[in-house]
Length: 327
Image (cartoon, rainbow, N blue to C red):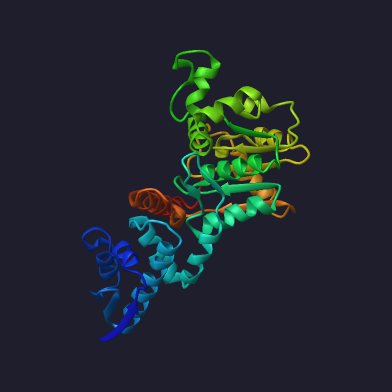
């Protein structure tokens, strides 16, 4: 049994660290089987030596999060704990320096995980970036944030957001309205992200001027997209032909971000995913970045992480049983 002392400089940071009914500290105690006692802004951590060291590093990581103005929640604690296990918790402070843009309500948008930061850096550094990973990792939201940033800085003249209109177990023909009404539900996540960044009024004004375009992927055929920031969302549902068509639309002074989750392919069984194929074909091409997210980058409810891990385990066990896997 050893003890270690840790001093927190500001009382308000100590209150944020402990959380409601000390729930944050209790989570650290439970994870590392230690006892944490508070004396003002001083913490005493007691337990087995290795566990005390890890708990102290986790608390220091959480303080770094607080110092950059981010709230502490269950997802943050789980992420910091995973970083301590990897020995990368010292990199948490680097996330504070990267404000992508400000929402219409004045909230700064920053990457929340190292995977997200790598993704944002790849978008900055490359003309084309693929973001591949599970739901809740911020692939679409961060891409839209980078598009709005480039648009506000006059680096591009247009933002173009597109998705393939592939049914996820539903049929377009049964939806009411004309074609635009039918595809609007597929484009809703893109609308929502733009509303958050720009506000509904600004969004509508730019839409009417043609500075923003949100359309199904089929509308991209035959066009050359210059001076544009183009985002292809749900790209796992493109065919190889559609993906090639999209990638060859790229014009001068443009960027493209392609996002998707290869575990949620809604194409018929006989169809290959254009996203899966493109990441294999283009992985060694200069000026193209490919970033893979995992469950640690999920910034939704903790259950989303657990669900993703459970599905991954199930499919991996299935591959071992069957002796092969499906794309």
